[in-house]
Length: 530
Image (cartoon, rainbow, N blue to C red; front, side, top):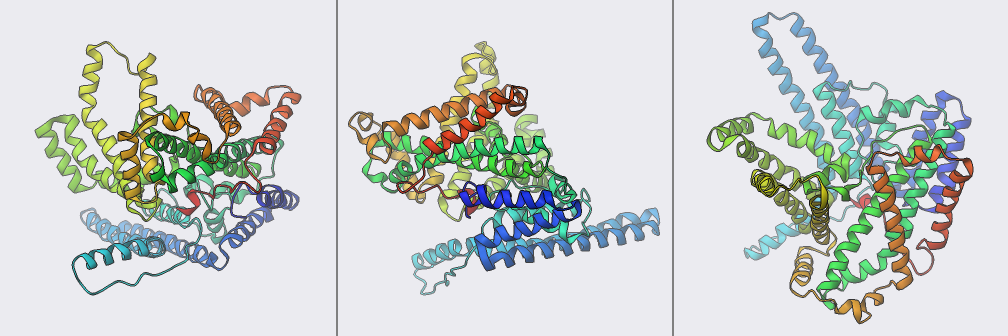
């Protein structure tokens, strides 16, 4: 059960948990969800479940520790004269920061050791070898629990929020454990905050007919995207990325576009299954995608793609850095010298550098992931710096950026820039990514489209037709949703025969056109590896 679209999950595990959950009295339902979540994690990671357990117990105690310090501070402040309150506050802020630092060492430190020790070890050895030093760092082979990046970020967001006193530390270990381990989110997110779902998970509300209907529809739509589009593209994509040296620039462009499509359909499709699974139990999870390919800039794209990751970096890295005393002083000085637009960009760029460095590394231990982060950093910073000149130029030639062909141009431009970034993201290393990009720019031809090469990559004409029609269907649904219409709400107003026809239509499409069986290897959960 390593995928949310596996038969074992969809037809056995999820229905069984849902049945038991609704049969038992309300007070037992959260316990059923918690036991099911640990069983799910055990089925994937076995003994590595201990990491999740230790992480949960750790943040529970750290949260209570922070609350105890805050309570002590309040008692001391109540007995302190006004002149001494500032010193007391400063003292207790330092104490709390040391607790948060300890939490980061435990949780982020574990993640760094398990996920990045091999990467850093190999690079240190390469430097030592280049310098002629006859020493080497041992490369540890460590097993990494699936989803560790996701539940580590959830754990740290809880600690940060308790430190900021925007969330009260939870004395109920079971409720906190369920927040950390809820089975639909444990592998690929979304990265939830404690205030998002902890209380509603523990309420144990009975499933309603609307929950069951909407959740099932969302799950079917996600399975449609995953097995008809993402899995069908998989063979061609693996062929192009592993054998890129044998193909021309035209095929490199196909590789970039096809992988971007696959990644979106796999990840957003999985999120549909995840959010739909939670909805069956009456739990509302935060959305992780908001039609990103309607974005008109790279910056906007990242407010629509993997939303919970972006907001985590924004709230816990970008804002604290940009609002720190050194950067605030730098902004103040820069405003006086280079103006109100360019002044804040210097400090903002420094904070963005850290965000995108961490963003790249979060996705994987490799130089191509770091390059992926820096690529988007450069695009966003460049757009910020040229914004006044762009706005002035468009006003002179009387073009409104939010209307007409120019808006479509901006969306196409953004989509192409995203595809280039995903080329490096998927490449077998930075060197391979640079080689593929160089081919795409300097050796672009249409020969591979006319000599039959395009149909020798694992997809025939029928495969391309199926993918194209499925993408058009997803695009049509996205257009309707982008205009503000809730498709499932709209569907619920139709006659029952229409609603059932849509559901059965999705099921039949998945059965008839889904890529599965002996000739297909399903796409592994891409983000579960991060």
